[in-house]
Image (cartoon, rainbow, N blue to C red):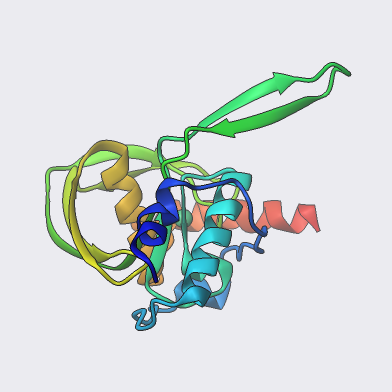
Length: 199
Ligand code: NI
């Protein structure tokens, strides 16, 4: 793999790929502890690209491999992209996405966390459900990039929350399981009823 290609893999992101089916709660794959990634190959890169495409398309700000049925320890995120509604000449509306800053975290390990923050979360695997979740305010995470190189990141605010939410997916946890049992059961019921109606 030549170096220029390596450098440009995520920074020159183009909105292209395949929309992957997103598994919804309570699919078994969402409850499994995912396996570490050992091969940093083209198959992984293609999956990352398609996961990003699926995430932007949804739209969402993060997507973990188990959510597309792959029980492996990695996720993608982008909390910075722009989504603008435009009205075309014929009066129809569409969304235009820009300012992509995709990131991919492979085999993440949380080293440190501190503080506490409460923020409303949602999840592409639990569509239509939003609830306040308590998380660490600051986190420090070691991870590998799509080529296996190691990095460390310190995060706060939305990035910290998103990293914790996505990492939970690798441990078989969806955000409603971070709530009190009562709240979880209420939301679970609401969600399943809502999914039933869609069928
Ligand atoms: Ni999620």
